[in-house]
Length: 281
Length: 328
Image (cartoon, rainbow over all chains, first blue to last red; front, side, top):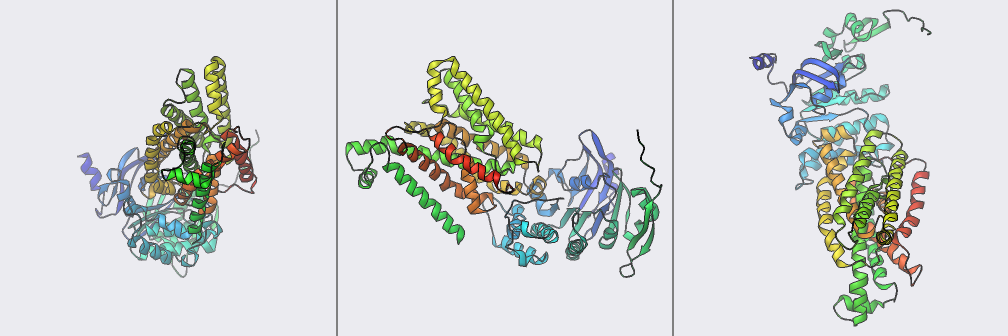
């Protein structure tokens, strides 16, 4: 009965990745009390929300990095925690935040790691692997950097190389944790456009994004989180309202629409309550 | 092309070191004599010198260098710290303490101390890895070495304390604890070989997942690896290798630092290439050092542990004094 109730919440059983009644905690602290989510096939989903709202925890849960306290995560119809790790890694690629690689590792070396789930101890390096690496180099436009050590690249180039590693994994699903944090404007655009290009090839992508305007501009679907719960979700123009922004970030603002793309833009952002002078005790 | 040349160069180095080890020492052999013995001819004396004195010593030296070099490379990748070395971090000291205790309780160095030594190494290794986990990632690599040095100091002074208890044991411990290959016989190698082979098998299996762990735990998990399992396998392999090497030659410091350091500077960032290069470099270094130990103060011998420390300490200085410690 109970089982049936939870299952019935799923609108489209074909969702490539979904979580039901998810509860996640760090030690004694409950980060996500109860959450249902499903990713939409072939779309870019952006998860937004204030610091500490559980965005990254959710992403790590979906990528089975952290085990949920309760609830199930369903990957292609199967409970993700019952699947062998290698099978999951063939269907779902995760790019965590703030990655570091050993000094001297080249772009190609890095991308080759993406082939690990497709290799076994007996079949170490195949024709398929070679082809996937070449394809990833092209897709992420890092072909010219193939033999450069990662530590000699710019932030944007390095991030594209990491994404190329995930591309080489040849998964249907790609989860990205703040893929543009610490990148300047130009490099952010570089990475977001790559993400769009991957979605147009049919990949289902979920990313945690800090910048609301970029999320609106580059995502098909926005999931807004606060205190470990989904506040609202939908297309950017439907979801983003001044009320939501006040609820998430505690700021007031006005909304305009990008004359080219039509996506919402935040202007005149200010605190709802004027800053109190610091109390001296 | 460059890699290929490096491989050849290191194997040539190993070959020359082996040759020197066979020929030099108390009573120098002619090249022809040694060759004659190896092909089954030669005089009785020469046969004795080569087959019973120098060849076991050579082979045991190779096993020791191989084990310590590979263990160092594994531990450095696991802790993402280029200074993580079994000798400096207390892994060798752990096994030295266990063996000292065993000697005191009546075991002789000639009997099977391998297992005891490996248990001690496992304990030391566990402490080290626990220390890195507490310390957290991105911390100063030197801090881990300080923690290791403290553990080493503690365990070695405890070993010294054991020597005060029993004079017979003290002599035996003192000779063994400085590290030496003198008077090694074949049966000591056969006692250690199975565990070294087991460690080798683990290394072959774990090398690829371990390489991915260098990209961070989450990335490794994302690629379908299990960091906990990888860490456990590496710790077991390191304990088997260091425990085995320590049982064979005593607690040698710096070998596990210098060998991977040289290998990495030739091979680059990938642990797998580094491990391949440790195969010739580790044995070459031990054998060269052992040959030197016989030549420097002929007809007497200098303890091998002294030579490796004299070579190794300046290398540690160079790594620390370099503008910044290479990230792993």
